[in-house]
Structures are given as C-alpha cells and as structure tokens.
Amino acid sequence: MTGASSDTAFTYSELDELLRGTGRGGFIGMSAIDGLIAALVAAPSFVHPDEWVPLIFGGRRPNFHENSSGYRAVKTIVNRYNEVSSLLADRPDAYQPIFMVDEKGGIVVRDWVVGFIRGISLRPDEWGECILLTRNRALLTPILVYGGAAGVDFLPDMPAAEKHRRQASAYYQIAGSVAAVRTICNPHRAAEANRASKNRRARRARR
Image (cartoon, rainbow, N blue to C red; front, top):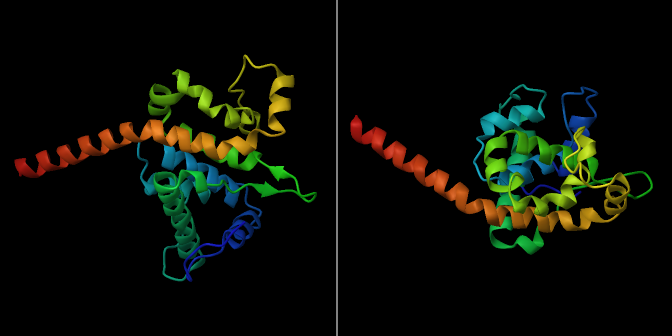
C-alpha cells in the first residue's frame, strides 16, 4: 500500500492497521474502503460523505477534533477519494485499486470487492438503470466473478468452474472496469448535478 499525501493524514497502511487492528467487526480495512470509494466515484449518482463515511466506522461518526485519530482517518479516506476521482477523470490508465496481499504474497481481491458492492448497494436503482440491468453489466464481470466474497452470486449463469478460472487473473482487469463504468455513468451524474443546481436556484428565487 502507498502513503497518503497529507502530513496530518495516516498512510494507507497505518489506517488499515488502525481500523483492522481494533478487533471490532464493524470496522473495515483500507482495501474495502478503496473498493467502496471506487464505486462511489464511478457511480451514476452522487452519495454524500455523511451517508457513507459512517459505514467505515461501524455506523458511527468518528471524532472530528483536529489531529484526533478520527480526524486523521477521515482525512486519509478523503485524500484517497479525491485521488481516485482525479485519476479516473484525467488519467484513467494510471488508476490502480488497493488490494490486500496475503502472507504468501498473493493478491487478495475479496475485501476490495466487498467494498465496491457495498457502494453499489447505496444507490441500487441508479446502478440498475445505468449498468446492472443493461448490457453494460458485462463491464463489471471482472469484479462480479469475486461476488461470492460479498455473499451474493452476481453471475448465476456462469458455471462455478468458469468463475474459479477467471478469478486467477480477473483482478488485472478491475482497474479498466472501474474506468469504463465511470465513463458511462458520468453523464448521468452530471445531469443529476445539473438538476440539483436548477432546483437550488428555483428555491432561492421563491424566497
């Protein structure tokens, strides 16, 4: 894992150790956070941080007092969100997910995928309309072949043997999948933002 950019933030490895080392099951590690962030950035609909940040901390808002561990943790997470957003917008080929590595040096995709699917679940209707219920769903195949990690089989028509075969290398394609999904979803997100802006202007005009 690489480090976060701000002096007041944790490195990604530090944050992972802080969260996963608490022993509290409601907290998730950096790889799952990164999967969640990828889904949020690529999504067809904006999700406010007040909705998704507490999910990382067992449903609670962390202490935001400056220089507290909660403040530094959130700053690290926001740094990564901004980094992913910038990369997918300007340099999608440079985007890389943060995967865990096991004791033998193998890539662990499970945590990242669980986070990504959790992100989809925050706006299921919008994801369904734009991606999951359209032919664009195929773009998510490199992610969905690991869907069992989230306890759901997202590819029921694919034989188990085929999923297992693909899992050996599909993670190489995940970065490209996220970038492609973001490209498709971005016009929907822009239209949503435009509608929200018009509604705000209309409300101000009525005052």
